[in-house]
Length: 306
Image (cartoon, rainbow, N blue to C red; front, side):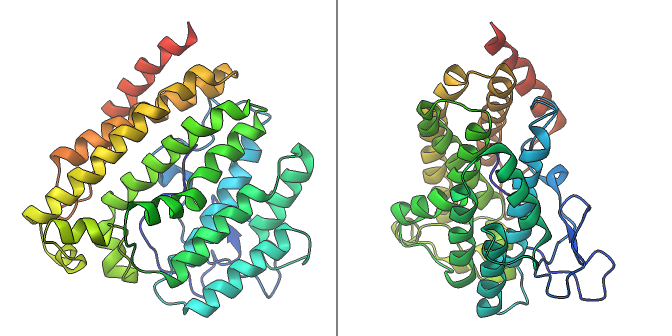
């Protein structure tokens, strides 16, 4: 259910021995035109569980294949050195490989293509992700909440829908899943707001909300939050709280008990991270979840087994 979340990273160099490897250390095709620039980040570096042991052993590799594809595409979009047209070309190659129009160039796309063929899940969720990553390559600012929500439609919602479809869940789960995935994405934007601006000059905080509180994107370059930024963070966290309230229906609507637990844990972690961001300053230090947050979320999720 976890949208790919992490701070922007530099691509590995052409001589780096990790070049040509998919996320999580998966061997990649030794094609000379491999477009992936794996950052070294994998699912263990994310805020929330990605294909954890709660997921059925038979489905876990397919969740990981989707994550690997998303991670590699995100690394391209978040590169601080690749020009925008190069990013777009690389993302286009990933899509061409995924859809079978090209036979090499992206190991993770090849792996996901095989996964989709085996499971019958649509490629639409993966190609929707690429829409968001192409947008990241060219768009640095978001005018308002509606524009940011539309970005999340492509960057976050497809992740949850792919996992739900993989489990054969009812479409009635899509709406609360969309809410949860959007919540996770906005939380990540708040965590990494200073880093996003510093590394790729990208600010996801809505410009109209910044203006309302007499703040600007440049305020994110400071060592700590301003009064205006704090008001913007809190306003966005109000949105997150509303999304999490909507997402509360997801575990109840989920047929698979394993996925029910996984979604309940993720929802609990989202609520806890929102609370930490209420009390913490993401400019002074990255606000993170703790092992205690994870343990408490797991325990709270157990009630969904009843």
